[in-house]
Amino acid sequence: MNELKDTSIHKDIEKNVDTLKQYLGTEESFDVVIREFEIGDNKAALCYIDAFGDDQIVTLIMQNLVKVERKEIVPNTHDKILQKTIPYTETEVLTDLQDAVDEMLAGQMLLFNDGEDKVIVLDTRWYPARDPEEPEVERITRGSRDGFVETIMFNIGLIRRRIRDPRLRVKPYRIGRRSKTDIALLYMNDITNQELIENIEDEINSIDIDGIPMAEKTVEEYITREFLNPYPQVRYTERADVAAIHLMEGHAVILVDTSPSAIIAPTTLFSHMQHAEEYRQNALVGTYLRWIRYIGIFISLFLAPLWLMFSLEPDLLPEALAFIGPEEVGPIPIAIQFIMAHVFVDLVKLASVHTPTPLATALGLVAAILIGEIAVDVQVFVPEVLLYISIAAVGMFSTPSHEFQMANRVSHLVLLVLIGLFSYYGLLIGLLGGLIFLATTKSFGVPYLWPLIPLNWDALTAILYRKPVPMRNFKRPQALKSKDKYRKDKDNN
Image 1 (cartoon, rainbow, N blue to C red):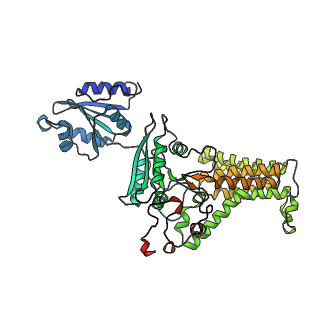
Image 2: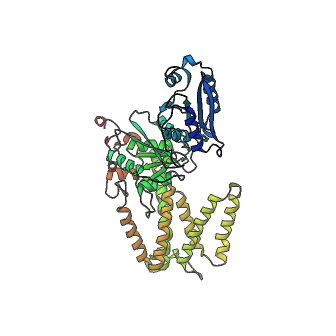
Image 3: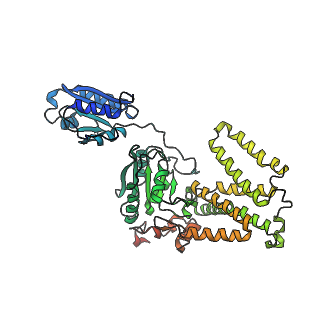
């Protein structure tokens, strides 16, 4: 059966236990534990999922309950058990059996007592989890190493540790008719734009699906509904400090149980170019690192297309740069060579993700041989193609956001194809079309190219240069329309 036909809790404990056994399939599912015993000569039952139960806590609760005498718990059995017998703080009482089963499947323990038409829910759950460690994709040389993990409560705790403010709100949701995945929406009640929160809440509540095993990615696609746009409408982070600073700016953060990635909304194109390392160095070094990253992103997107255009249209080159073109093109058209090299780099990258660590070195050697001297010797590629594609690949790996990196790879391929077909007209079409596309894109109402389009000079300079903390104006991003627009007392600005 899919749902309980009768969700009421009966005073006859046998009916409740039989219903649970049938509903949960205890004959087929060995991990469902229903422990029947007596509390002061009164029938009782503890029900929980074995994988989520902490054995020490379960044993302690059982020891306390079996010692109780009947006169100690009658009348008002539930109330007296809660007040005198159970040495546990996280408890609640439910009167709906379906709600109780949902809590049990989420890891909590149920305590039924004969003669009571309600059930005690004990939060004794213990999830198999790894300890917080530094995220692989957001490493820094200085700063905290405690990244998010797959347990939502741990992740909320990491953020609470950094923002000890009673105005931090953590709204719970449960999504998926079967998976019943826990989701948390975090925001600062006195900072974040209420319209943004209502928009996100409406999208989360509209999710109608049986389960979200892909966790945060499924949630992202439901709340953004931008299926044909390769550029990410939200930002991901596995760092608690990055999530905390975005909350202080007025963003909303979405945490999904079983995922170590937090969703930050809204976002802009320039947000995907920032990295925590810039803020762990002094202002001058941080600005230098930022510009190195910007140059790397530019190279990853435009270096190979520009060289391809000049190789097809050498008349566009000034005499001083005449050496840029290839000496020999080879039997394969130069545009096809670039497209093949682009695809091969992505193929090697994809293979490295699926290759076991002990074999990664061997994969690198094979890739270097195939795309190196042998490919040149058999005239599959000219040396210049390998050079510029390799430099572009280095720039690709300097992009902090993986989603932004992959969007740029798609744009890079589109530019190569357009230039191969239409020469410099293809470049103009690609640049103009891409600019219009990004300029009309919005993330939860925020222009994607803000603060460039529309122009906000103060915010743009903050993106171009890493200002020393005491010299900042501490204005929150204007595009977010925050309730509190300043991060410090306006009288002290």
